[in-house]
Length: 463
Figure (tube, rainbow, N blue to C red):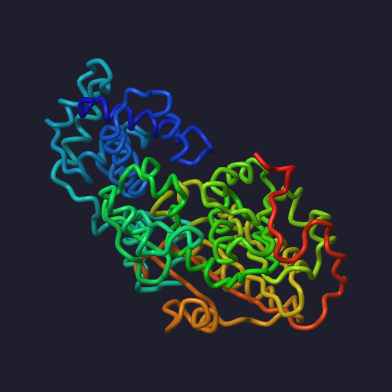
């Protein structure tokens, strides 16, 4: 593809993102799926164009308004023009050569767009007159929340959060150790280095089509950010335990928990979206996992929860949140979130946590995880839960880290906080609570065919 054709494709994808509700990566994947003629190198460059706009949209919009004096509105095409000039340092002449209206290339620049291009030529992305939120590529409404957490370090955290994320892999302990998986990847010319925090993590120096490698096909490795790996490790799921992944989604942490359990015991992967659980089936088979039951719930208060009260050793709640910690991978999420979303999510997190707590047996643990950086979704939820749950006590992050990973906990004593700037991971928060004393509802009798140590796949969801 010509440079202009790549730009046109990126504009098409950005327009679809602006007009839809699906995540950017899903929309981009659909675009490429319908156009098989687009090669791998072209897809990479098109995606680079798209994500440059998504990461820097606030600054691009500020420049468009300032430089065009209102002549040009902020939309997919004008944002791409601004990104090519301000991020890629293109010249107006370069721009005109790509926007020439030839087949597959963007239509020629309008007079107002030509004036915008000349006004932006030679400029840098940031400007002293920018508001703090714009300079940090944030929605205005979120800046006070994040500033209250990071203060004068906000710029460092947001700079790291605005960079592309590395490709992290988790070694599947059912099939390999870290050295063995690393050697298997090296045999296919994939260079991976150990991650600093997770003893199961490998980080690729260069992005590769991992799905085509034998190491991936054979289930030796799974794509998972190092922070997510750590969150699962801290749960300390042991062989023979009864464990619930309460908001399992497509099963990333389910896979990690099952590997820790060495396929012994029972692990129930729950979610309100059955289609997400269905997607986990292939991943479970590839990983050689056989102790997982997939259970679709109507809500966090599904009758299944009451029937299984006080019967699990570990209950992991990877709660729905604004997802700020994953902006390196999903920068479009920052522009979708609203203050209403935050308020609604805070209520939902509270309800999910209180309901999931019913599943924990005395002596068992509840693990609350988010990929958020906001106190409202993290410490505030943990504190509110403890205030409302006198039969639970905080299980300090430092203690859990020493028992599972070993050494000093890098992200806090009571709670774990990981960030891209400080730890090189996605942003993650982990709080653990241990149940003391009896549950008000006695546990049910063990299910027939679900004895301790006997793994199975629920035939209702087997695919």
